[in-house]
Each structure stands twice: as C-alpha cells, then as structure tokens.
Length: 319
Image 1: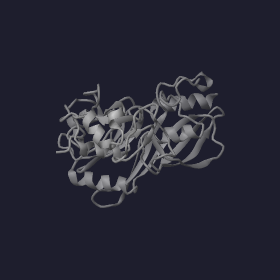
Image 2: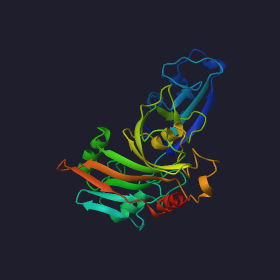
Image 3: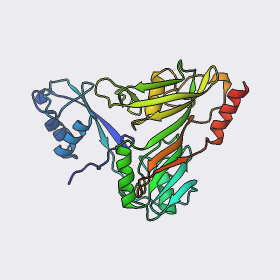
Image 4: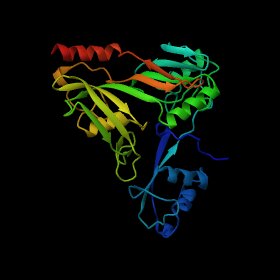
C-alpha cells in the first residue's frame, strides 16, 4: 500500500534537506532518497518527485536524475492526516441547503480542516456536527469538503452532503465550470479598470509557506479582475480566478504591485493607507455559481461583504 495520502497538502508537509555524498555520485535520485528516507517507499518518493515537490539544486527534477557530490536536495513530505474529525458545535452560517449539498458563508480565521498543530476548531469539525452524514469522498477528516478557502479568507463555500453530489461538484471544479467572484481591498490603484493576470505559480523555493510567480515549472494560473471603487491609495476590486491555485489572487495582485490589505504573508511590513484599522486579510469569496449536482442548472449564491470589510470601505469612502 502506498504510504502517502492520496491528496497532497502543503499545509501538512515537513521539509527535508539533504546533500549528496561522494558515495552517491552517479546514482539515481529516487534510489538515494529511498536509502536516506527509509520510512517512505520508492514509489512514494517517485510520486513526490513527479508532483514537483522535490528540488535538486533549486529546480524540480526527475526520479532518474543522476547525482553529483554536493548536490542539494530538498523534499516536502506530507504529514499523516488524522483518521477522523471530531464533531464540534461551532456555529455555521448556512446560505442555502438542499438534500445533497449546502452552501456556507465561511468566517475569517477558521481553517477548513484539521492539520499540523490544529486538531480541532475547524470548518470540518463544524460540518461533522451539523451534517453528520456529509460525504467523506475527500477523506473522513474532511467531511463534505469539495474546495477550500484560505484560513484568513471569508466567504461562500459549497459542501457535499452525498457522495454523488461530491462527485458532480468535484468534476465541475475540475472542468472549470464553476464561476468564482472574490472581493479584495488592495494597496494603490490599478492602471486599468479591467485586467487579466496570466502568470504561472509555484511554491516559493526560499519560503515554503509562500507561493510565487514561477516561470520555471510553475502551474498555469489565470485571474481576471475589475475595479469596483477607487480611493487613491487603495482600491476595491472584484477578482475572477479561472484556475484554483493556492494563494492565486494574493500572489497575482502582488505581482501587479497591489497586494491585499491585511495580508500577513505578502504585504508584511507595509504601512496601511490612511492609518486604517485592518483586522485581517481583506479578501472575501463573494459569489459562487455552479451546476446543480442533480439537474445541472446553474446555482448562484452570494455571501455579502462582512462587517470588517464594509468598515474599511466606509473609512476609505469617508476620507
């Protein structure tokens, strides 16, 4: 049996750094890793290499790559996920509910599922309590979870209550027939009222918790955005991600010179415009449009802007 989870999650990864020794000269990368990381099978290590989470001298590589003494190897190995999730009576804001799915308004500050150093208090724990028969297609530790939002991001999420709905919704996300609209408050004003950002994204080689624009093996990533309001030193944007990469909107807007207010990863150390009080990441999943898992008819659900984002916008308008 494969000793890696079927779904790899960077949030549940630990990093190994290795240096090839003289005795490794000419040997295959996967063979050396199998010897140096004996807790994982060679098949699992080959899968990690093909997934692009093994770097040889800072670049993704192949299992058959031959090593030279002094080569630097970095591996991100997934941690073991919990086998179950404990139901917890955490309030849920249910925007819509049908027999086979529900749509939630996720609050900021709550993780979607348990992880490293976070055994409970997550959306998955709340779902397990409110919807005890929710689909476990993504694993028993992720009941009903079809897609994810960052911990700091609020907004609309659809969950599956049945296996059939989970399959249909998952296929819709993979086929990109799900339409997503986010709202963000960013530093500065974009030059154009509408723009398209087409930049490949991958893991930042220097900072494991970050993503970055990567032209050397990054995955295709596409976001459209339009300006909703302009405030001089800030702007209110609507973002429409066409792909679903980790931190996609945050990194794409950073690449345009407009990081999101309150972003503790990508806007760390920046002075807030007008001395604003910004309590968290100003990013909200505003609207989700998806095919009904049974009828195929389009379902559109909107999660209104939360009070904290409305307060920031009010302060910007007042100034």
